[in-house]
Amino acid sequence: MAFLSNSNTGYNPSAPTMPESAGPGHPYHSPPNYYAQANYGQYGYPSFPPGTHSDVIRSFQMVDKDRSGFIDETELQQALSSGYQRFSLRTIRLLMFLFKNPNDSLRIGPKEFAALWSCIGQWRVIFERYDRDRSGKIDAFELRDALYSLGFAIPASVLQILISRYDDGSGRRVELNFDSFIECGMIVKGLTEKFKEKDTRYSGSATLTYDTFMSMIIPFLVS
Amino acid sequence: MAFLSNSNTGYNPSAPTMPESAGPGHPYHSPPNYYAQANYGQYGYPSFPPGTHSDVIRSFQMVDKDRSGFIDETELQQALSSGYQRFSLRTIRLLMFLFKNPNDSLRIGPKEFAALWSCIGQWRVIFERYDRDRSGKIDAFELRDALYSLGFAIPASVLQILISRYDDGSGRRVELNFDSFIECGMIVKGLTEKFKEKDTRYSGSATLTYDTFMSMIIPFLVS
Image 1 (cartoon, chains in turn orange, purple):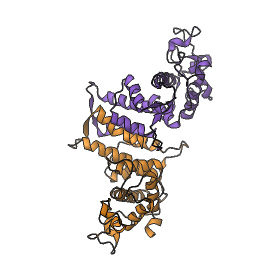
Image 2 (image 1 turned 90 degrees about the horizontal axis):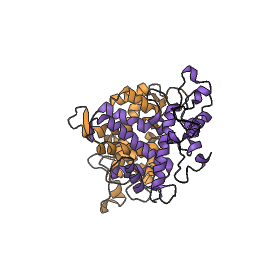
Image 3 (image 1 turned 90 degrees about the vertical axis):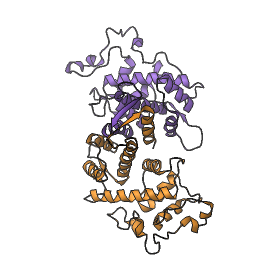
Image 4 (image 1 turned 180 degrees about the horizontal axis):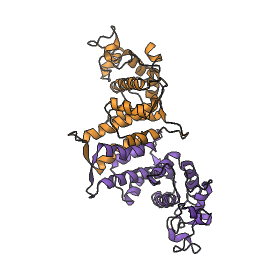
């Protein structure tokens, strides 16, 4: 599959972040329902959102061997490998936590998988835009610019601490590969969204009880 | 050294958590100054607080091979091994972050080491008190009681999430060894202290700006 092989080598216009690109065989107004075709639909199994790229569906189908309609963390790792790369289990756990249905246990269905795939595709485009020398890595300044372009203005001091997570102790300038970039990005995105939920007037500050504060943070420590 | 060998087998009255126990050779009013004795003192090297148990000093000295007066994370891991056990690097990093001088890089001196050693000693006593069957492990309920006895009343839902960090996926009830207990405890202690700093009136809630919120949390994710 063409779009799978070049995911690490530059911007990919056929990346499955835009449902419109599904091609003439999959018109948006009449989406293929993978689960219906595969005899899942009639029992109310969760299905993919209209317009989901067939490669996304195929990646999910490939790992959902028991046809349960849900995949766990190692299956997610495997499914994303086919479209992007093999992410570390630490990153996978964070993605799982951020994208899974809050009422569900540690597994995600087609809808969440499609959203996650699309999100990674968008972050991939950003990563490649800021990885100007195509080294496959970006540094602290590029990360700041990348996050800023996505609407996240985090303090430089915080960014420094976050980046130190990837310091190998060699004394060299810290650079992030795509896996670490996704992890960093998801931490910032996830915490920012949690904060915004509490800052309902968008005033830039929020009043939190101790219980709320602890509940907001602990899940990020667990992934 | 007697008190070193039995640290895993029950309450240890000679644990170096109380400076008064340093014995007749080390009267509190005339403490030994290890660094002064070893020709460090005259250049303003940091020294141990008065009354520090000689075993604590010895553990530090043993790993501070370059006699710099500071130890890094792997040296800290080694130093604590002699008194307690070999902690995981993840726990060590968290301890390092919580105990190091905020203005310092990733290293700790004698004063911080003595405080850390003493703190672990206190948590060891608590661990052993709640590990009623002496299995070397405590479960979620015992953890809750242990934290409560230390003054931390965290919501049950948060505790569940925190404990899931140690779920090996086997389906068995999650139990924490001393390493995980220390990690859990330090997360709760560290985050609670950060929150209290902002809740100056002890009202149970605090108003945080986005920058403050991010700065409070990110360091816990890095360790």
